[in-house]
Structures are given as structure tokens and as C-alpha cells.
Length: 129
Image (tube, rainbow, N blue to C red):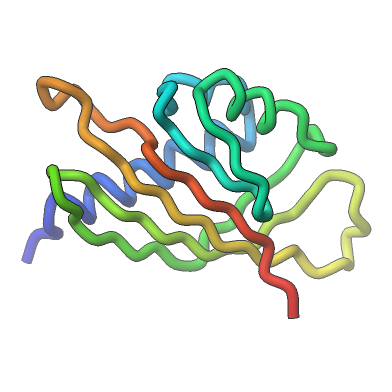
């Protein structure tokens, strides 16, 4: 049985987002708009330029995301809710140090004319414990 379209969209988005984040964070700008809202560890940021400023000014240059789970749901207006859990390995950490655990959720909204999706909401949290 084929995956529902919202699952396909969510999984493709996650692969693209983290591949881009791990190689060229500034290139994520095309995924956000001025209405986009981003939360990084509780700090709320709105707007494409402000979000990219935050992402490109994080205190590490290289990072590797390892996604362990993806959950996708359809939303009103043909959007997609995407919830991701995974491991994060940051440059400069000891090789034997366990990766950081994280969770991130996205609300994707369709672009006019069905030309793709943009990130309406993005919430990132490290999982301590």
C-alpha cells in the first residue's frame, strides 16, 4: 500500500532540511517566509531573515543529524505536521561522547499553485534527561 501524500511530503522535507542544515544552513532561507515562526530552546523568532540569522549564528559550524523517527499528520489547508526525533553530533565533541538527543516539529504550509511547501512553524528542543 502506498504511503499517503502527507507522509511522502514530510519524509522528503526532513531529508532535504537536515541535509541542507548539515552542509549549508544559509540555504534553508528558501524554506521560510516572513510569517514563519521558529523556536530554538524556547527562544521565539519570527521572519525569514531573523530565523536564518539565528541558524547561521549557532555556536558550531559543523553538525550531523541522525533522524531516528518521523511522524507526519495532515493539517487544515493541506498542510503537513512533521515531528522528528533524533541524535545530534556537534563538531569538537569527543568521539566517545554520546550524541545529543533532540526533537523538532514543523508545520508545512503549501505554496500557492502547489509548487511545494514552506515552513510556517518550527520548534527545536534538545532532550535532556
